[in-house]
Amino acid sequence: MTTLLEGLPFRRIARWALVALSLYGIGWLFWQARSALLPFVIGALLAYLFLPLVNRFDRRMPRWVAILLVYVLVLLIIVTFFAFLVPPLVEQISQLIRALPDLPTLERWANRLLEEYQQLLANLPPNVQTEVQQTVAEVLTSALNTIRTNLLSYIQEIGTFLVTSLLSVASTVAFLLGFFLVPFWLFYVLMDQQAGRDTLNRLLPAGLRADFWSVITIIDADFSGYLRGQLLLGLVVGTAAGIGLTVLNLFGLQVPYVLLLAVIAGVTELIPIIGPIIGAVPAVLLGFLDSPTTGLAVLLLYVGIQQLENNFLVPRIVGDSVGLHPAILMVLLVVCSQVFGILGAILSAPMGAVSRDVFQYIYGRLSEPPRPPGEMPARLRAAGVAPPPEAQGLSAVDTSVDVSTSVKEETVAIEPRE
Image (tube, rainbow, N blue to C red):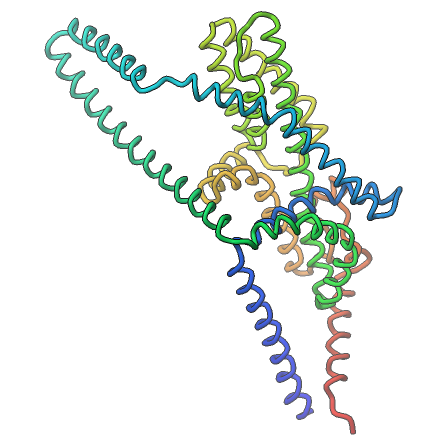
């Protein structure tokens, strides 16, 4: 007994110290090389997006052939994008920049507005003129100070980000090497997905495997359906906006920059709740600049697209993938965009769903009596999300038996031989 008490803590502490030291060393290396790891982060995201397609092809052909087939499809999409969409898109952006008013034009507009303001002010009584001038001066001063402060802040942040990014990209060969290696790295990741899962499963303590893979399943269920659905939804909405604006031009209404407006509509669709409104604003403004009829037609077009999306596309493509009330989504959108920027705004919905579902799962496992490992939250069970294979068939008693058995085996292993 004395030998057991003396040996068990030392070996366990030594092993945990070794694990902690190894994790610290790996984390330190990754942090030092973080600028060069961006290609692998992008590769991991691509692997996550391509994995369902590879697994589906894998049922009918060898896995390496399925991966190469996905590579060919992605390459065709990229070539088509750069061959047929990028040149006209760049041309429309250049036209828009050239169409923007220059400084003399803006000065003339400002002088004209000032003259109209002075004429209107001259027709008012003297006491009213004084009050109006004071009020306008205070409002203008406050507005100009706010705009100047925010504008300078945004410009500085953007400039700092661009300079830092360009310097980090230009100063490291590892960054370019990483992009060169990503296709090969991605191939091995997709090829050995199950082997990597099995290896990680063996490294995990027996008592934590079911809970670990259950949490991973929850995160995947909340993110995968939403992200893939939103990407497909953005593609459909952008295409619909481009076709609709082209049809309006065929009927004699002049809506410029059709391709650019379609891209804006598709990209802003990724932002929950307010994204469709943001995407419609530039098109509607350009339509009203042409004529009230054109503006109204563009507005009706975007309203029709949104009605089609909400009543037909969203239930079939995205569904109730996050299960969050719109009021909660709006708060999450503001909070996540403030903390994490534009990426936080795009991912606010799945991050909120993951936080809620993981909390419910862990809370249930810590309850008295604890829920069985692998039991998904009610919303995910209703959506047909199955527990991971590592948790199927287990119960709370089974888990405790696994833990006690592993402890007994460990105890026997460290007892000295007589």
